[in-house]
Length: 516
View (cartoon, one colour):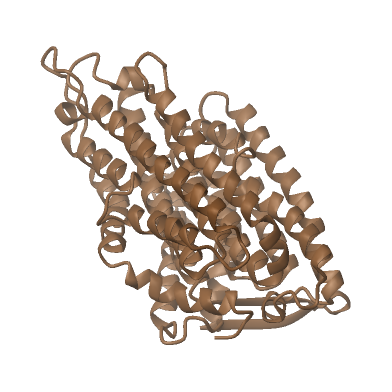
């Protein structure tokens, strides 16, 4: 188990270096470009298999216990350690990251985005995977920061070199926002480590803030929370996200929405809730207020983009929907209750599956139509997707209703539990305030349903004015890349206990100060 977790974290880095080296003569094949893309599929596939084996070997009877741990002294003077481990909170995110990266590599093998050499593309995707996996596996604050930062450069180049219109501006906006937030976050992490005498996240969580004064906790939560909120993204620190998603290539959007946004909310749960509970208690009402504003704001922005004649971009609409969905995650965390935090973690996984699928589908629609403009896609030239590519239209409708939280699909449970957590927040938090937040968030679910159904009606159900020109329907490689996301969306919706059985004991222990 130790070896598996270390391999999962380090393996993509080794694969990235190998991708940049000349291929051995026997593996070049007819096309060197295809050979390096095949290398990407092989490496990400090996990491996914290792993650699945790790999940199978995980002690499901004790999900609150740190497992597969490695603890090696790295910088003794600062007590910085190479400390790895997983529990019921981090394991689902680890598997989700491995799955989405493999599906992106598989999709790119058949549909490589336009841009420079595939060698650099594959190497960047693998470095991105390694940084994301490390973020969910490390148990040292400084290592967490390094892993958190490691993903920025690969994502910058994926947007800047393989993106679409306005890619340079979007890439610069992404890197500047996230770097500024990270600098502030580093100050908070250093404050905790220097005041407590350790950077070990397990020891700090067990101490549960007892070694830190309330003023230190408040300052640390403010500094670290800003950095995490930028990555989440929380309103009003979200403005880099729509531009980045609109400009990014399809696989860049999938990875950005599916796993990178989760790093911010994971930091709230893993670091701030257990290590600085007094500081979180102080800022919880403000976090909840920003969360519900983001829910309503994101939904209203989507409604404006979906309006006929607005020239709304479908990728941009899905990006704004992420602002709303991540608002539910933040609301669940702000409640500081097991119910709310479990809902936040469930919504994290559901959003990764559903929004990852949505960006795959929107990318496929854009490839076929040559545009993601909603007015063009709404069927002005004949029947829309149901008439021209029925399987693609059906999948888009499925992903849309999953995103709006239809009961029986993954999107329902996380948002419902986040609302339940707000209904009865932790002791000391204002219940009337959180009931108000809950009511606003519930109204946001209605707005979400409104814009998603408008999108389905306009894109999938356009008027048939003439015999439509048939588009290429879902291809075999697209079925292979999208089917796991569809299946897991249904499975998580019908059998939520699989995920909640992992997260709940770990969350209970985390909120109880390291005691089971």
